[in-house]
Length: 149
Image (cartoon, rainbow, N blue to C red; front, side):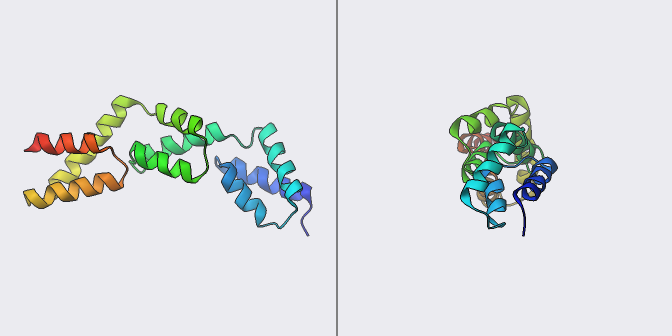
């Protein structure tokens, strides 16, 4: 049987490995089948010791998904909502994305997907659907498609 001390040590390691959301930590703690009041104590200890920080998690999540997976702001926001991140933290994370880099990344993706397709009519639809599924804004996609006409 796990004691609160050992569980706390495991959770510190869990949070040290990479930034975690409160939801992820809560899901992990629920697997240990410990009382709710113990879970609350562990979470508050993790927060006060700065192992758990929702703002830091949001910023790291947004930066990583944008730079590595090339997600747009819409998809990043939606995924942060699924992690029960507050509106303030979501907006803070999105504002940390450099606007110039954001547009440059969009333009590179647009050119890449546009050049992959030879059929002009089908190309518009494929490019639109692909970029939309990656969370890029309608106006960016449509403006770029219209410029190609």
